[in-house]
Length: 70
Image 1 (spheres, helix red, strand yellow):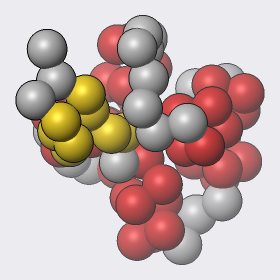
Image 2: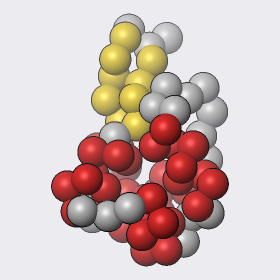
Image 3: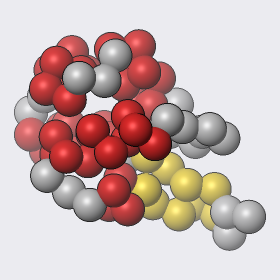
């Protein structure tokens, strides 16, 4: 089993968006976005939230992940 890093902060920085802007644009609660951005290695995630974030950044769902350890 590998560890993955969520790339939400990277995509937000690319767009010049704050955590609040990402939350407002995606409809994902601020606390969820903040947690995903601040704690990049998570054991559980809400796939519905990640799908909304991927749509907001106009990327594929799998683009939000980076494998950091296998």
